[in-house]
Length: 172
Image 1: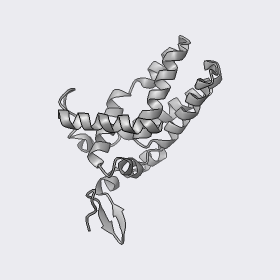
Image 2: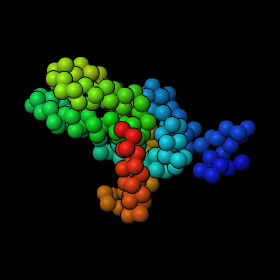
Image 3: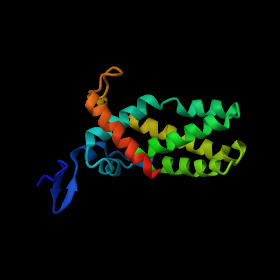
Image 4: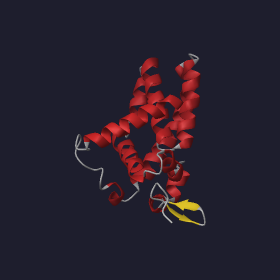
């Protein structure tokens, strides 16, 4: 039986063939819950893959940039980056990294000095890099539909994604 989201149901339990393809011990170890990420997006596995692709291509240098802002003691820049990364990792269901970013963000909202969250930032940086490494290990064929030049995503699909992310941001 095929569910309304294109999932295959056996004995009442929905199975997404893409989730099975993305199941990987390294992804699990890095805290990426692909099944929850796809479920969060209403079962739209292609949208989830597009978010993973965007994450791996657009956020690759974020930890280095965050470290540079820490060294400059730029509290506002660090806060904005942590906030963005907490949301982005939440959107792809990288729960451990997202939760760590949330804890740091909460402390920073209380104006805790950067030095006080330094160890937490170091720990989340290592976990973030492990997450990127795990996603990088996925075969290129998984991302074949998303590896187009910048700006080539269909406008309707980009607008739909942006509207969804704006709606989702209400919960963070």
